[in-house]
Picture 1 (spheres, one colour):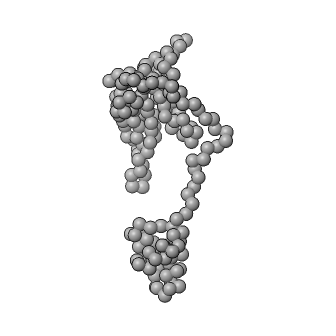
Picture 2 (cartoon, helix red, strand yellow; picture 1 turned 90 degrees about the vertical axis):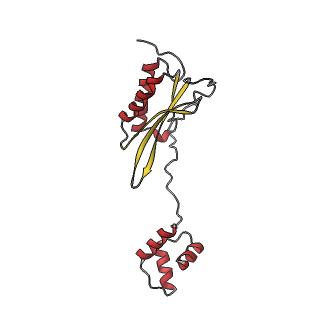
Picture 3 (tube, helix red, strand yellow; picture 1 turned 180 degrees about the horizontal axis):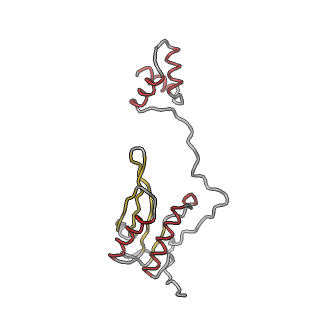
Length: 176
């Protein structure tokens, strides 16, 4: 392990195969699988460039922050929802949380192993039993989230508008 650590310190971009080759060059009889296992045990791995998945496409729109000039002065003034994922072993689960912006209190949350509408609606229903916001803000202003997840959030947003009668700007919805 000492020799692996020394080689890794000198060449942090070396993976298990290159370290195995270097050890064999130094006269050690090792297998690449053993070197892989020892590197995992030591918590080291090759340093390599990561994928650039978060770069925005030039065609995506930039949406303005509509709550910028609003002073949030009381509970139930502005609520927000957000969906994130939590890695668990070899998979992950989804978490939706509804937050009051004034108190920073999590009003409700729900966890699901699939990204479907129903666990979001469940969190929303629990929250709406306790009260209704004046303004509901979605937190998906980034272009990389314009996918199925955004459609689910939009459906939840529409449900909030139906329940409260006001949209993100605080205006009442016009009846048709």
